[in-house]
Image 1 (tube, rainbow, N blue to C red):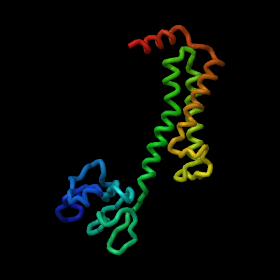
Image 2 (spheres, helix red, strand yellow; image 1 turned 180 degrees about the horizontal axis):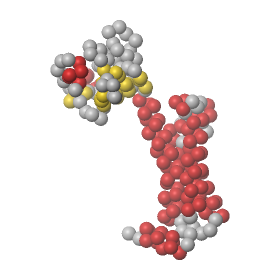
Image 3 (cartoon, rainbow, N blue to C red; image 1 turned 30 degrees about the vertical axis):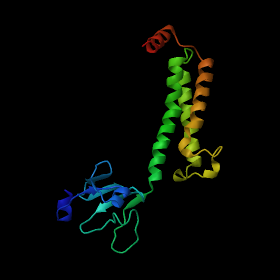
Image 4 (cartoon, rainbow, N blue to C red; image 1 turned 60 degrees about the horizontal axis):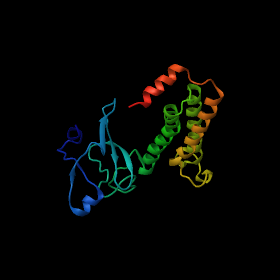
Length: 198
């Protein structure tokens, strides 16, 4: 498809920066370059660059997107700038935020739900909501990519580690609400015992 779009044979190669220095080149891996056509038949490519960041390009015949001389916005004659470019740190931040949110909501409910017989549904829901919102508020207040400011960090802990505040909040809320509400019934206790037995 790419060959048809540019009107000549194409050999796709992917390489890492150290490969260039060592004179080795590797075949393209779909993990690092994704391409596809939109509803209007335009070819788009998402390239995950090893050094200068990731970019989204609208592929047009004869355009030079810069690799391996340049990545991201080039602002140089002869090169075509990407439609959108972002540093790899943003991708890592998104993954880190996902892990922090998952840990803040699911981990306390799983641990206490299995190992503490007094845990109940109301406590689990309260813990999950508390952990989620503490984590989310910290992420939004401290992450520059979400409009926050690093000056709002607690104990100089990076936004990617927001789960460090969400997890204890979830544990605390789950314990308090479980103790203030009805304990689990005999059916729930029997299911818990069955879960704990290998």
